View 1: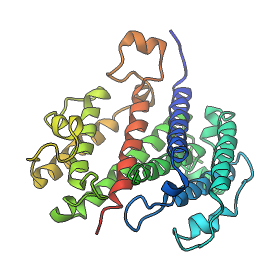
View 2: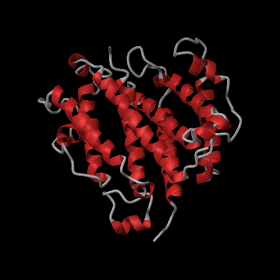
View 3: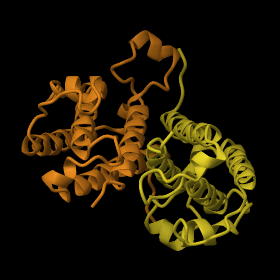
View 4: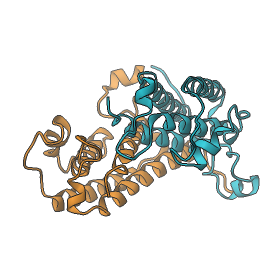
Length: 163
Length: 163
């Protein structure tokens, strides 16, 4: 009989869901050739290569948002968040984007594993201490769930990509 | 200054994420005409009408899985879980499927709101009491996060549907 606190079980569930989701995306990206990465998931829609950059940028931004570290690749935001796919002609190379994806998620995973249950319900960086005192739901845990849902949303699109 | 327990804040985050995700799907389905519901999200892929039935069936199954109630529409499984889209010629009517979606999610939302933080880390129905004693991660909270990710996955696909 293993006894674990409710809050620790919830952290285990949420970080497990995050890790599984990132793992699923990694498997999809790894299984795609350069040509497949450049073929839109549906006619006129995003290419998987853009989604690779987009998810990397969003996950990279989680490092400061969760207040666990500095960004590794802030330069991706302009191409992969501010602008839609095909708005920028010269994307970083596929090889580089694959490396950034691995580095960002590894860094994030390492930091995530150091957070205690109490740390998870501390404020995220986009809310001031004053606002957080009035609204304690704006915490790191919320960011983690929100970014897990975001990745799942795009994974659903990537599985539609022509083989 | 509002003081709330860590576990209650985590429940608030997870149930909030669930509610927002179901709300997003509802908005997408409500905004689609019959013709749009019958147009595949990408060439050869699922039609939104199938996804409406599929998500309804999966959410309906959460009632017993979370041990909060009986299923309302178990008859949907055969068409929308066991079989892929277009394998069954005669689907339930769009009007009925829209009603089932609303009823199932309303029932689920009502029950979800009655669960305490301690209730959330109790076992789900697909694990025995004995197995749960050895692996307390197989709890209701895990089911909620997993089904939220599942819905997000399909929402990502539905936003690709031709307008």
